[in-house]
Amino acid sequence: MKYAYIANGLSLKLDTETCIGCGMCIEVCPHAVFMPDGKKVRIADRSSCMECGACMRNCPVNAIQVQTGVGCAAAIIGGILNKGNPGCGCGEGCCSNG
Amino acid sequence: MNPLSNGPISFRRVVPGSALTTKKQVIPVVSAKLVLKDTLGAWKVRWGIGRSRYRVDPGLYALGSPIAESPVMVTANYKLTFDALRKELAGIDSWILVLDTKGVNVWCAAGKGTFGTGELIRRLGLTELKKFVTHRTLILPQLGAVGVAAHELAKATGFRVVYGPVRAGDIPAFLAAGMKKDEGMRLVRFGLYDRMAIAPLELSQAWPYVAAAFGLAVLLPLLERTLDAVSFGRHLLVFVSPLVVGTLVFPALLPYLPFRAFVAKGAVLGFIWTVVLSLILGLGLWEGVAYFLVAGSIIAFIAMNYTGSSTYTGLAGARLEVKYGLPVLIAAALVGVALAAFHFVPLFIGGHFS
Image (cartoon, rainbow over all chains, first blue to last red; front, top):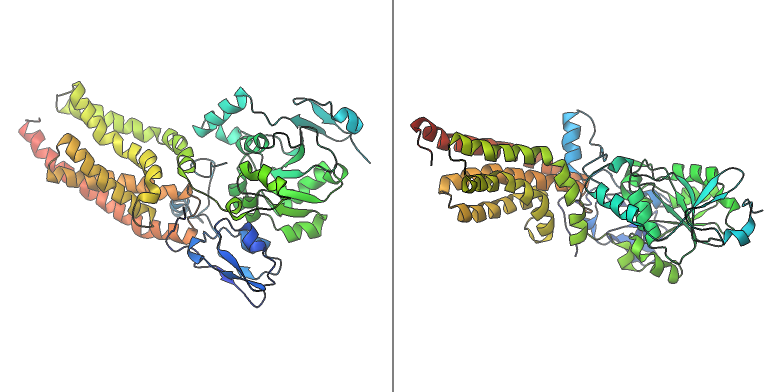
């Protein structure tokens, strides 16, 4: 089953000029956002992108930019209350799936 | 040069529970078999008991009787994660390199950077892994890619990273296929089991609210001087059920509820529950409206916070939920409380509660 969420993948940018088509982004993406496209890669399913940043981190030529962060409302509320950035405390409450 | 003082022969006789000792470190030998203690431990942390202390020591482990050509699996030091990995490695002699992720699972630790390139480089140095294996390949869980840059690691250490499957259960098939993944192994799923896995934890954390709701269910019938089993049961249903619906029913129904925003999905579920409860208890229109405004807001709030447990929500969307959803929920709940008060206060004054 494929889930869809609001505002997903809006910050994901792929610089096709720089892309060398190594496929690392396809390899690490947990939501099959990328597809091979000739000798390059293209964004095939932007709305499934949860902006985890695995592709950006593993792109050897820095062709991918994405604004990463925790998609967790509780963390955002915590950030507002503490007047800080939304950070996942993750001590308790979330992130418990092994 | 083999740093194992005993050499490979006696190495094969090493039994789980014992350890290999080199000049510099002790390498525990572990089994793929989980014992009762592991199962009980997993059950406990699912209920949130001692969860942040459920760890294994970072370092190198031997599973079965690995040799210099055996695969190296990298994982986090959350024991639930470590156990999930070794359980799937039955019959696969291998090395397990445990990073210090402060007891957090791979995906979340990768997001924080503790399951990261820096820690991996450091751990490779501390364990002197190069002396134990002849190959230079590390198998990492794919979700670790959020924190590890394979090309940077190769440059710094000479080790090549292969991102294995998302789920440990796919590792045997992945290895049998010559370290190749099919698309199914790459995708994060969020099936019923995954969605419910966190429910006990959420429930255990909600206990102060459950206790408060329980208290209300006792207090109100007392005020009405009608504390009998039926009245208590009705109040229990009214006050406690939103917490249970939000925590247990919402994750179960997540894919079937309309709208994409969790807060909207939760509001729909709150409406459905209001209708169901109104039918069960025979609530009047205004009682129903007040109930929806308060209980629906609570359910929608719990639903909104479930974004943190889901595997597909991004930051931008969660921000939108909080920015637009939270004020609406607070306002609705306040209006609902006011409505309920107007409904009940005249009854108090009249002194004829039914």
